[in-house]
Length: 313
Image (tube, rainbow, N blue to C red; front, top):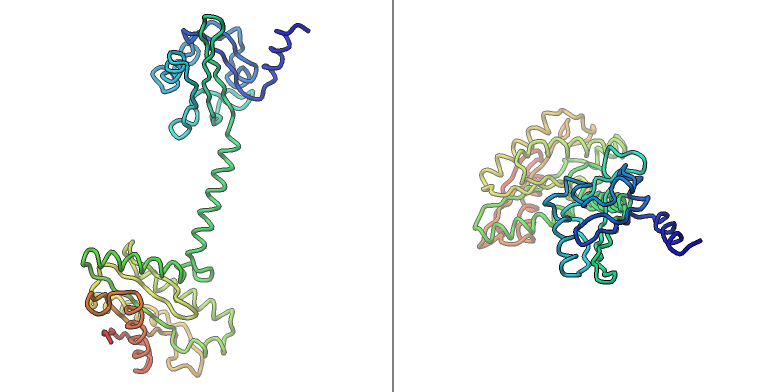
């Protein structure tokens, strides 16, 4: 077998697109990989300029990059973040549908006094697909790490991050910020009477109920722990927060979920403590949470199923 025939056979078997352009960007070599993915056999494209073979490339980045490579003898790789499908190439034998995603490398070289450019086109569709899948899985894991697995609302970790962020914003802008801590009244009695499975259902229903009363995108509903829930209300004064809390308390009571016989109230209810950011007294998360917690337990002591607005210690 002659050397040129052997090289031609090898290049034809390569699992990537190979074309060679002369100094005028005319195609002088076109391998089988490109033929099977473009629908154009070598005799159809040899002698044509790249733009004559692919009119849509006129004025595009790849035409400019080829000109630069040939003029300056500098290799380059086309950035995929700008165009993942520069050539109209499709899965082998289809020549239609969704384009394959491509990595394109330009390598100029000299043969005697003539300048040429080797264009390599690799199909990276599977790699890109795997990257997308991995990104999707990573995003899903991140989302799960911020969501309570039982109730579907934000978890304690999400709550802590959001409270820190909103406190810093309130401190920076001098904005108002309020916090609600709420607890299902006599929940131990509920669990003891109905069982833990029904107790979980109760937690989920209460979480959905109170979260549905928070209408603004910036408001955050979270499961604080056990049967305790919390809400972060940016740009909300103590008076407004007390009104929000009362709406939540009344709505949960209106659901008329039967409680255990030895509970304080015949239906499931919430006790809610309210605390608001105060740059002189409640300026950090610890102080704000302690104030809301004191208000919550005051609501418990005063008979449950009520809202108490906390004050600085």
